[in-house]
Image (cartoon, rainbow, N blue to C red; front, side, top):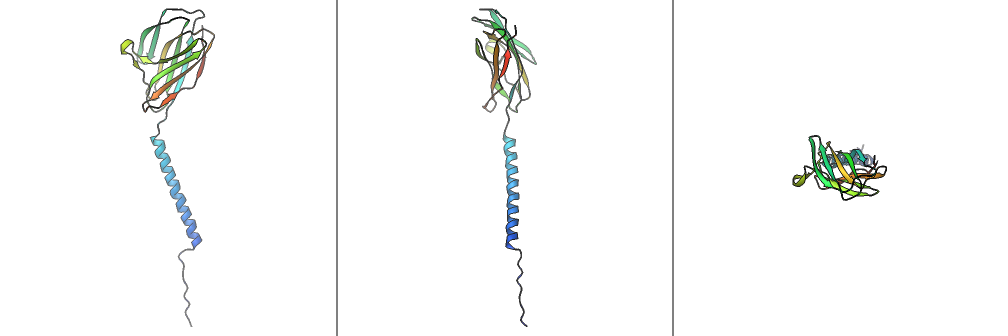
Length: 181
């Protein structure tokens, strides 16, 4: 009697392919998850929001007068003076909040509308010692600015832009405000 030898295979080839595909997918998912977490961790978010804004402007207004330019923070109020060259003088009261994770600097308030097209860099202090405002993450800053040319009843568009501590820029949404007399 002749002995027949049976060859035992370790694994069928189609089962090996299925196992290889499963291992490859598992490694791919693990790498994807790792790199997504790495990118999200290194990516800072930015956000700037106008939390309140109001504009008061007289119907007739004053011309050629000296007007206060006030800056208020949680630490108190400082001020300086400005001189209007004509038109009516209104006062824009605005509070902005840093909703991102980076410090904001060089904060500029822009107001556009009938008779008004102005941008003002928020400063703290007065005169030669005035310095641009910085807002840390989660903090707010309030200011009262003079707006020359504003008239009660007119609608004005207001937005704020700033640069971050990494050099990128961020802007708030445009908020429309009607000047109150």
